[in-house]
Image 1: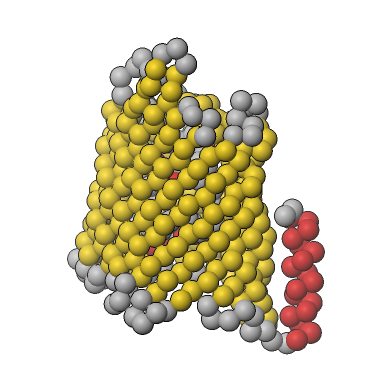
Image 2: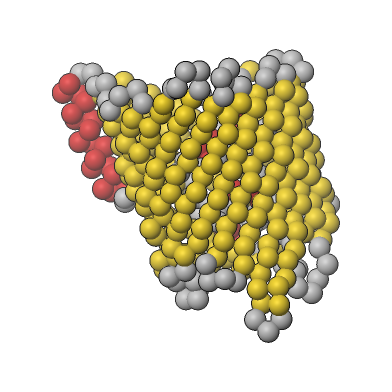
Length: 360
């Protein structure tokens, strides 16, 4: 849905809302600003000489009219340091733009540019005040690749409460723009079409633990690389989350299979958090990825990617958070010279990030 078309829809709904005089309009904003520096080479936009060009700003407008209708528009401005991914990001983008019809407390429909129901972090990736690190696990969620924040289409959501259990199901269909990484320095734009799948969450009694499963299939509809056009890809995403007063556990697993038979990408992480007081929290994350490719006339090649991290969080308030984090990485996601995982050894480097997050 284009910005012009969506503006017309928004204007119409605003008019209807004003006539009904049953509107509720609200604005929310999020800022995530960081400084990052590596000890050697460049990693996902963070260079050796450091950069302050790491930022995520989002402005969200919500219009509710009546008891069942809601319109959400979110604008976003994102900077990714010196990463080549930045070439595909506009200064200001329409992040979300959708209409929601709430049939009852358990059933809803969203149409437009809708947040994709995917894992723990996909719908809150702009809200830095609730993220333990500056950015969500990059080997799981990608940096513009493999996964997507939104789907241009529709999402149907249904919930059940059998006894003390909670069950949530989201079914979606649509497409989105994406990029495919050829190596750490080269990305190709593609259009994903016929993305269809579901996300299901089961919350245990007591609501401290929940487990999620996401499955979908997608087709590469168009792009710069003609070898990808028409390829079907399968994605599996499994999540587990437990939260107590002073302890947090999160873990997710991601697998994408390329039906052309040339390979798979798998990734997983474990995150442990300890909250010492209302102000201080310490988080540890172990993030891993593995690529397996079938190379014609050569055989199978596989390599690992790793990122171990510690983050110390200080909350001035729930809406104002300062984070200092240190990472140790090993693999082939090094920008600037893009090591070849068929011939070059994995590269080790350390980097640190100091970030400031605010919301209103």
